Length: 165
Image (cartoon, rainbow, N blue to C red):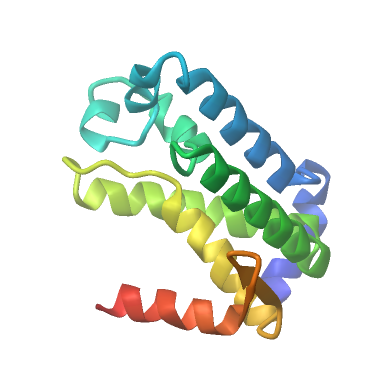
């Protein structure tokens, strides 16, 4: 905790306020750009073998990879991502949330290099934000299909079971 406080004092001026908003805007922009050019997305996801061949932009662009091709699903996921990321930033503070997202990005890149012929996206980053939100706000209720109330803690349990399998 002492180290985290020291890092926060030193690097707080470099923290990006409303980071989730920028991530959502980047994902929305890529989604819109990919509608007329679906061949654009494979040039941006994280594929370690191609990074080793000099395509270094993939180390950053995978963060802005849109969640799906269905516009309703994209809207729903990005709305939830914004809601959860903003809640975490408000709870933890800008620097700590930025650090959390940065660690998630670095760990995704590191894990992708463990299996260099596979493709990596930002799914694990957004899932980690979802799980952190579920940990802090377990009684938060989502309405599936705008009808069925489900506590976020039960959805998080399903995600953990899925990862366990």
